[in-house]
Length: 246
Ligand code: 6PG
Image (cartoon, rainbow, N blue to C red; front, side, top):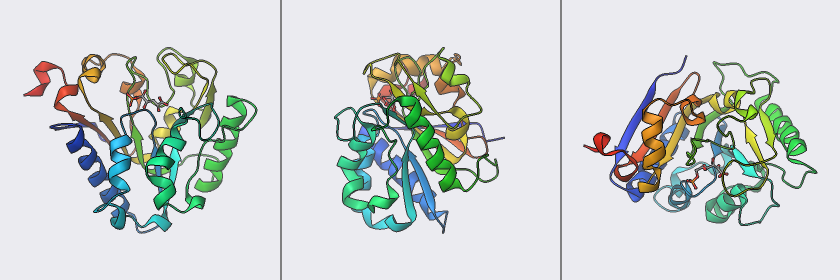
């Protein structure tokens, strides 16, 4: 059973990106072997990606040993401005990481369901087994943001995908919030198979959902956690409800 959720509060978005980068590097340093990091989409991680691709962080990352996956993607072609992995590639991966270490969801597939099946195969082959073994997590680190409805990755509240436990990746035909394109998402058990799950929440726009999260509402964001490792919520002051800010 993983440790409980730890909330770390920082001043603002810039401090949040640096605190997240420090955690990414610390996590990498703790594993002398092959490292797997599961990135997230949306706008929350952009500053972190920018920081990781620049000094002093860039030279602290052993790029040959680090593999980059993505927790969900919009079912649009590579290079489309809505594509999450293309966003991460554009900000830092294409400049820093060997191409063979970048593992996008294959959104060129015929359907989100086919893309999900293909990505699940890739993950299983990388992991070296078809069943997740809790003491041997799939990922060193999983990054997540939280949507206004409490979704994480593309696991939306009340949708069947949030309940899936026998698949690692699922196709989601309709999104619950914009952009309204089909999605492909890792499931809770695949995301939870990590040494650390790191959420990033910044800005006053997150305050309403953060209030619901902290009130313990049944939301995907409250169900997502590292099964055997740490679950850390990095928040800036603006994202917190008033009574939590002090
Ligand atoms: C996506 C995501 C999604 C995102 C949250 C938060 O494809 O949209 O991966 O889960 O992380 O919606 O998005 P923001 O960071 O833009 O608020």
